[in-house]
Picture 1 (spheres, rainbow, N blue to C red):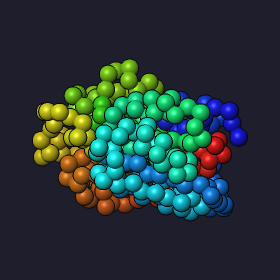
Picture 2 (cartoon, helix red, strand yellow):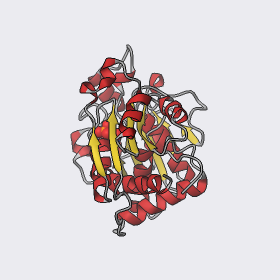
Picture 3 (tube, protein in one colour):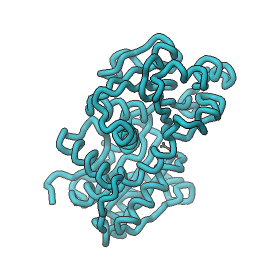
Picture 4 (tube, rainbow, N blue to C red):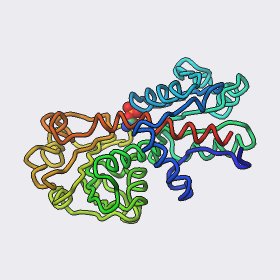
Length: 304
Ligand code: CP
């Protein structure tokens, strides 16, 4: 039992002890520790206001594996389309004894406001990707994938390439990786890079090749067209300038791994030969979603 409500809204807001607890518990579960049934008797609602394959499915699978009942609300057929507020949708489900809420939303900062408006209610919220702010479980997944490949994140050279300005994944991954001691460089087309001080602890490279030079991890990000009102790059031109091909990958460390949080766009930010090639760990990232989300849900349930 804790006094303050416990949510996972961002990695940035986690205290060191909380961050390391979640990371180490996820690593232990990935290594085969018995998760038990810490969610037995609890109900989890997946509320996804934006599309998802990985996050939604793995939260559901993780929750079921540790004992929860799972409700997947079809928001296009819910009372949200009749104007019901997010807080009132959550209150409605909570009245039916739902305690855990996994929420993806297109808007920035909506979850902190939701948590404040529900202060004192026995429920927990997990951010499943919010606007351009954070995608905390994806950040943990990316760090865990590197940790499992290299034995640690400290001192590992990571290049994050692509549309970083619109990417909540980049924010959470950079936060997790720098907190664990990785050296992170970023690169992308100028209009898709964030303000210089937006990602503390990163080094901004002036070209793709400079970012790749000797990198042990190459993390590719897709162009977030849904967040670009106008002027999104032409796909063919983007691939020519910023697509990861085998030829480009040759500039990275000889043992470099290739990551992508998904969904990925073949022949736009990554060539099929790379996405299907021997260096990719994309499916390991997907698999690591289960232990990360089990660890997060166990921690949230413990705070109820
Ligand atoms: N990486 C990620 O969030 O994927 P989905 O959009 O499929 O959940």
